[in-house]
Image (tube, rainbow, N blue to C red; front, side, top):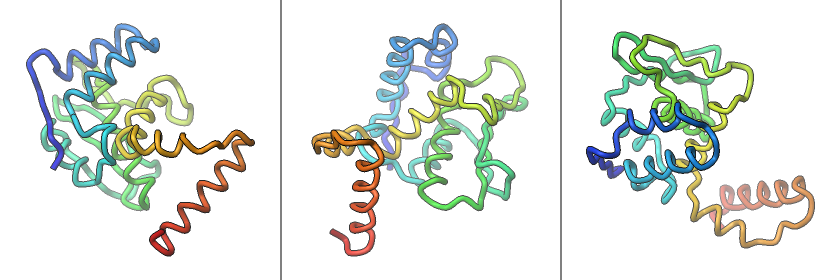
Length: 176
């Protein structure tokens, strides 16, 4: 089970306020540091679908999985928070989308309004990149990235991606 701490000084509204104040790198780092204190396992181990549902329960977010024309979205209406996920998504995309939408809740919740957060549907604006960063750290933590980054992939990115993909296939197929 995911450990969650909610000290009075580290609240969701405080994080949201920081993100609304300024989206430059130092403020975003501060917000992500606060998230890592609220959710200690975040960016330390790969979070699971169960962790996602535990976190949503903790924060009072209703999750609706149903067929959608988009991967997912987050919205708030009448004080209720909802994350909608396309039930047709396969893992790992589904897990990424789940944490991406949770990232919007933690980082971009509209303050005192009823709104659907369509954060630039079809574009990849700053809020989308921030939600992506939250999701990536949730499902692929720092320690795993650090281990991989010790390998010298100084060639082109396409070669590195190919080698990495081949390694993942070997692991999936043979367990090595």
